[in-house]
Length: 177
Image 1: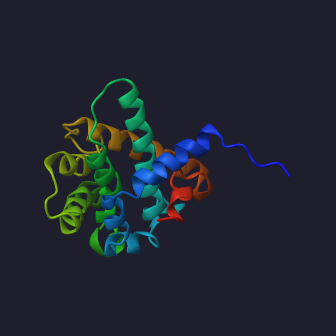
Image 2: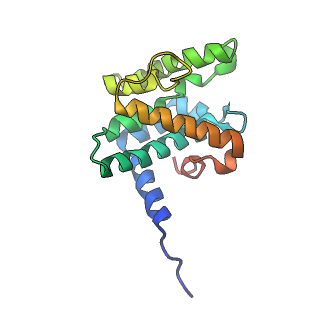
């Protein structure tokens, strides 16, 4: 019987999975916000949790690209920001009157959720969460971590909108969180 060869994709997925299960990641996964995010629909074809995992996985792949290019990125800030960026959207139907209000207010609510999970939330992480909706909102992120989360968020939203949950970049990571 032949054993299956380990592919480069398997190595990447394991590296990302390991990073996501840092102390910060585990704290987020066990929060009330993430638990509710598992069942709330997002982008019509996925859940907030699956989208969040996709943004985090994509952000981590961009982190490793930046590292290879000698661009300094704080990995822990990136993990916290990417996993918390949409926690404020949980409960959207009872919180927001329309998509415009949701677009502008959920980043503020996501910062509040992140501060509940991490009372010592640092400025880079807060900035990344608060400004991830740029260019829909006027102020861009001020740090590289925010730029990465913003790019990953837009990529995942497009992938989910076009291909649905089966092609959501975070779907494979969600079952192990």
